[in-house]
Image 1 (cartoon, rainbow, N blue to C red):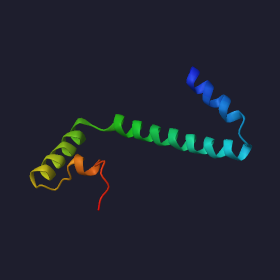
Image 2: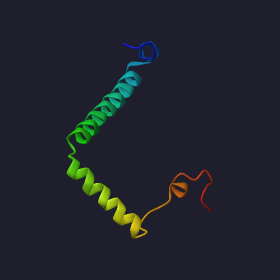
Image 3: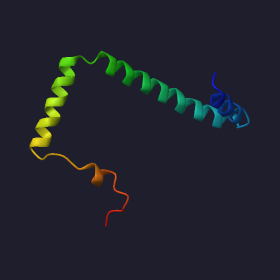
Image 4: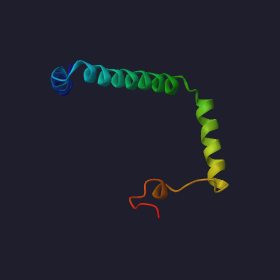
Length: 78
C-alpha cells in the first residue's frame, strides 16, 4: 500500500462510521467505473478506433464542434 493511501485511511479511521461508509461507497463506485472504462478501452478494436476517428473527422469537417476554449472558458457566461 502506498504512503499516500495509508495517510488517507488513517484520516478516514477517525471519522464517524456513516461518513466512512459514504466515502467508501464513493471510492468503490469510482473503482468500478475505472475498471469498466479500462475494460472497454482494452477491448476496442483498431477498426472501432478507425470508425470513431472518421466520425470525429466528419464532425470537424461539418463544423459540428465546440472549441475547447469555449468549453473550458475561465470567464462566466453572461
